[in-house]
Image 1: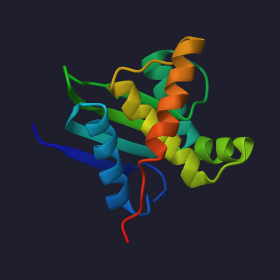
Image 2: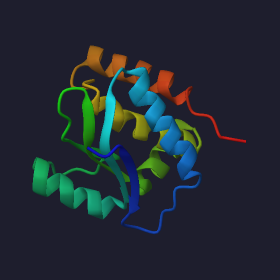
Image 3: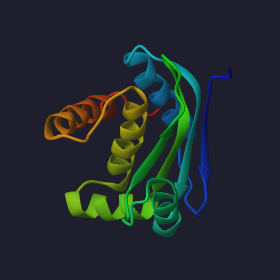
Image 4: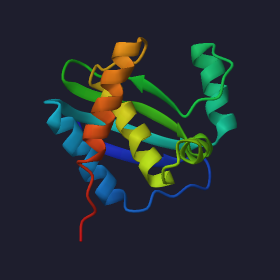
Amino acid sequence: MEQKINFYAENDFTLKGEDSYEAWIREIIFSEEKKLGEVSYIFCDDEYLHKINLEYLKHDTYTDIISFDDSMGNMLQGDIFISTERVEENAREYNVTFEEELKRVMAHGILHFCGYKDKTESQSALMRQKENEKIKLFHVEQ
C-alpha cells in the first residue's frame, strides 16, 4: 500500500505550501497512532459538493466537507471533499482567516478517518478539541 497524500482541485483553488500541509497531515496521523495509506483531498465549490451530498448521502444541504472513509484497521485511506466556498464563508462567520478554517476542516476529515465522530454534543466537543490540538501541530518549513 502506497503512503500518499494527494491534493486535487475541481475548481480554481490552489493549496499554497502543499509540502507543509502534507507534513502536517502525516503528523496528525502519527499523533493518533495510525498509519497512512492513500488519502486524497479534493477541493471544490459548493455546487460540486452539494451534488455529492445529494447523490451519496441523500442530504439536500450545503456543507464544507464530506469524507469517504476507506480505512482498514489502523491504515487510513479515503477521499475528503472540501468546498472552498463554504470554508471562505465559515471563516468570515467565525472571524478567522481562510487558512485557519481550511486547516480546521482538513484536520476534521482526517480525524473522522481516525474514528472521531461528531453526531452528538459530546462527540462534537471532543472533535473540536482534537481539531484545535491538531491545528497547533501545523508549522511552515522555513
